[in-house]
Image (cartoon, rainbow, N blue to C red; front, top):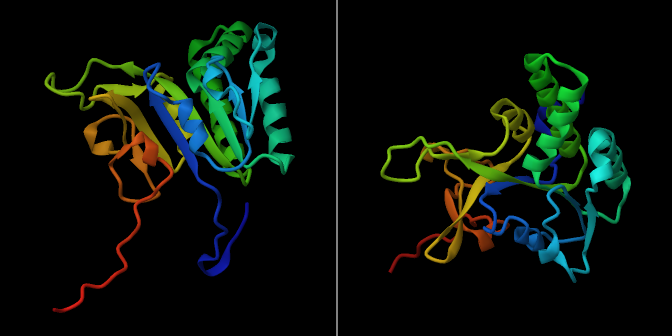
Length: 227
């Protein structure tokens, strides 16, 4: 355990988690991040990154599935140690979760215990990412829960992950939001009071254009002058 006296806590890079329907631009958001990026593509949706010179992509193969936990853990650790990479991207956590769960189910028949193992593995992954010293961006598909007031989208959507696994993983993240299309524009909901999975510990923004993900609202510093 690390100990910091008198509030002298060392700052760490931010972690972002965005979920939404296919085609809403989750992978495209990678382009906003500055520096060299390593993208782990678990759903093989990497075409939008073709030609990006500051992006390296690791594509999952079918033969990787039975040992996906070991592969991800090993490559993540190597990425942490590589000064070339400023940003680590995990695209898409829904796909990764399904692969990991399939392996855990195959090794045990105790369904309840299996989900506990799933949550523990993702919690450890989240902690490792937090301690890496790298900016982290993760994505997931969304699920329509069918809840809400029947008149709006409030409270209807969640990341397509086991809820406890999602909570264990994203507890380390500074920003969680839902990306969606409205009137032809990509928007990101960061307001937990809407009832969807969301949080923003970076600033006070609750709803933003997707293009403004990495542009935190600047605090007003100018004092009004008297006329």
